[in-house]
Image (tube, rainbow, N blue to C red):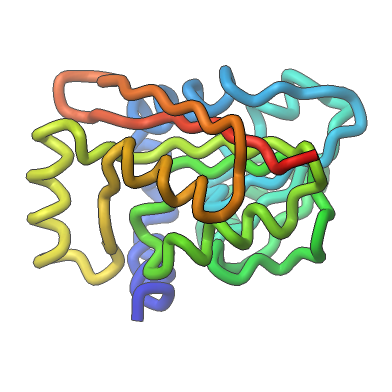
Length: 206
């Protein structure tokens, strides 16, 4: 049910998503952008790319890299195509079953999507699968170490069929380790008085 609920919720939001969440999206994508090293020719996948804000930021930083976006909601992808044109391939799909071959990208970035995934361990394993040896994962999401995020999690579990779970920093570190990522580093921060996030970086063993 989760994937269908996510698709329905974000297809309905797509036309007004950027305007409604401007500040949050800017802050959360900035966290991911700052943690992702880019080099010419790199292949970078954005899981849960939404309307393409982060992909646009990354492409502006490194036009010679190659970018790909995956999202479950077709109308969010339509908004992303308007933003990115034909320069970035965009594919409908789930983070728990990525439509990519093994070892096909050098970096995976995922912002504000993990809490929608019904099988988070599988999602981390999928991100590991598609990364090349030595590849980088950057994961940014809500952090249950903050009281506001714990309260939001409790409410959304009742009222929002799409929402699954908000993780603590320790829990998401454990997920990454369980998917055999190494060099796992995680930081927590508040981006305003309400939103508290974690930002994780990790690598696939070389």
